[in-house]
Every structure is written in C-alpha cells, then in structure tokens.
Length: 409
Ligand SMILES: Cc1ncc(COP(=O)(O)O)c(C=O)c1O
Image (cartoon, rainbow, N blue to C red):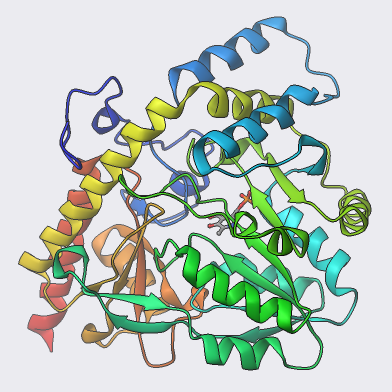
C-alpha cells in the first residue's frame, strides 16, 4: 500500500461508523446543534484493534469486576513496547500508574513545584496544560514557539521551532521549577528532533529545572518517521525528568483512563507516588490496563496501518484547502492526528469562529484560543481521526460557510 492510500490493508479505517451519536461519546454527544460533525476533541472514530476487543470480551465474560490489581505484566508490556518501538530502555520498577496523563500531571506538578512554583510551557499548546497548572495554584511562564516557513511546500504552509534564547530566559525566571514539554506537540504537529530536545534539555539542566515530557502522542508519528523520547537522549535527561505514556491516543482507549509515569530518580518517584495517592489518581481501570497491554504486545500492525490512513487524511485536507480555501494556512503535520489551521484571513476570532461554524455550518473544530494562539490570530484545530468521507464532508461545510461570509462582506 502506498503511504496515505485507502488500500487493502487488514483494517478498513474508512469504514468506521459515520456517527457515534448515542454512545456516551464526549465528541459526538456533547450537546450541540442537530447534525453537527464533530472534529474537535482528540479521540478517534475508529474501532480499536480486534485483539483489544477480544481481550476485553474475554474479561467481560468473567462477569466479575471487583477492585483491580494490575499485574506486573502490564509494566513489562509498556517497557517492551518502549524498547521495541522507540529504542528506550525503561526498568519496569520505575513506572507508576495513573488514571490519565492529566491526573498524573496534576500529581507531578504538586510533587515537583510544591505550592508556589512556576511552570514553563511552549505555546500554543494543549489547553489542559493551562488549566491543570492553574488549578494547582501554580504560575505559567510561556515560551512561544516560533512560526517558520516549511522546507517542502508539499508538507504544509508553515511549521514551528523552539525559540531556545527565549526558553533559556523563561527557564531562568526565579521560581521556575518545571518545563512541561509536549513531545510530539499538540496542536502544532511537531515531532521534535533529537537535536532540538538536546538543546532544550541542556538549558533545563543548566538552570536546575526538572522536565515533564508528555509523550502521549509518541506512537502517532507520520509513516516513515520515528519518535525521539526525551529521556532517551542521555542518562542526565532521564534522571532529571518524568515522562507520561499512554496507549490512549494511538489505540483509541481514552475512555479507559489508564496511563503511566516513568521516573528514574528514586526520591522524585517516591514524591510523585505520594502525590498520586493524595490526588487519588493511582487506581487503574481494570479494562484500561488489559487493553493497553494488548495494544502494546500485539497491535503494532494495526497502528502502522492507522498512521498511513491518518497521513492520507492530512494530505486530503491539504489538497482540499489549497483548492477551495487557499486563504487557510496549514501547519505541516509530523505527528498526532490534529491539524493546526490558520484562519486569520477570515477576520473572525477563533472562539466566535468555532461557535458560528457549529451553529451555521454544522461542523465543530477546536478553537485556537484554548491553546493560547498568538494575539490577533485565529486558528482551528482539525481532528483528522475520522473516515475520509466524514473529513471531506466537514471541509465542504467549512468551505461553503467561508464562501458565504466572503460574499457577505
Ligand atoms: C498532549 C496531551 N496530553 C494529555 C492529554 C489527555 O490525556 P488523558 O486523557 O490521559 O488525561 C491529551 C489529550 O488530547 C493531549 O493531547
């Protein structure tokens, strides 16, 4: 199968349900206008790999769902996956359990920053970073990413780089205790290179700032490229960081609320373990650890086909927008299934754009304001993890709406 083609692979992602309405889905059942196509929150419309359904079905047939004790095999599955897939060696006893990456982040913030530390994030970035840091009573220090032209026009219209001078200034602000890295980056789609991670990590080491690397999107590299784990760059980086892992994004398990935190430093790990206990976010969902183990142990083929399909969706979107809405500028997508689209040319602030598209065009994207888009700009984040037919229908609605507002002005 060619990259990006809807081919004759074993898994037919294009045949996924055209609607998940009525399935207790945040994406589809959050009250909204009748008939809205939801391409906002980050989960996928695809059925999970058959091996996962089988394993869960076997457990359901047991019919007993008391308190669960994850077996050591669950940590071993993750360690094997990280080694095979990402070349990262992780000792199973350095892994802590948590009911999600964001609950784990809350605990890590408490353990590392105490009551009054500051946290550096690279904006625009995943909206829950802002709320979780603030909910812990901590202060955010933003280091904006730098928008730059893309090298190859076939990949998109622009991309982003870290601004290392700014990062060094921000990391050295008094009171900064943690740099929260998003690797790969939601929403700008960057898969950071080893060189970029090395420079960022060295800045943090120089200033004694701990790193929390959120690698929840690690497995969603576009075909042909490999994820670089922050902690794999050097022993020093591993010792002064924690990494969040989860099968939830790549294998579509977000509703099973299961994640892991890897922390090599024993003292820091014990502080995080205590914070996880205090936050009551360490008791894993029975189905979550079963599904994650199966995903890591036996669903690599499914994942590889998924990545091809997602790349095809991105290319289909880029082609559509270039032909029909050339005023939209699209960030190149190296990883994740979330496309970052600059809508500034239409002159509608992004929160209003999201509301109006939902009401008037019956399509919902995530607005850029929640990611901390730069002032004066207007972005939408498009969730590409749906059938190509759904994606093209959503884009058609967007194009019709944009033509309408252009005609009216
Ligand atoms: C970068 C990032 N971290 C964390 C999460 C949420 O993780 P969880 O559902 O495990 O809390 C998301 C969800 O989209 C995300 O994009």
